[in-house]
Image 1: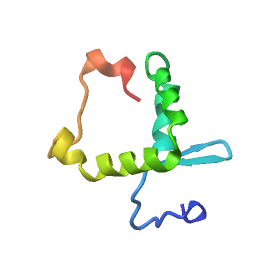
Image 2: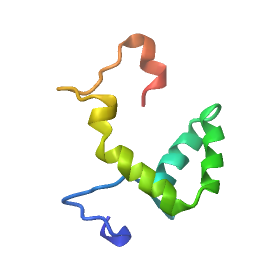
Image 3: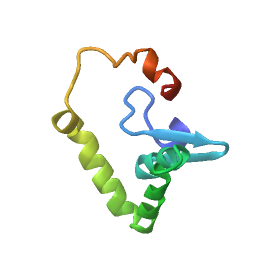
Length: 87
């Protein structure tokens, strides 16, 4: 984590390690979406937007995620019908 500039005691971003590539912020989100296949792969079009703007939007959503998506006391635990869709 320190190699990519993230304090391991206070991580403030999403990091995806893909082989030797380390992706952060909006690049990490786009890599995850691309890996999900269709229709999420379409999101790779957002790579055309300058990274500074994408990262700004990523941080804005991240800071306000509980207000936008809600907060729960415990993590989601899927039942058997979702088993093949959850890692």
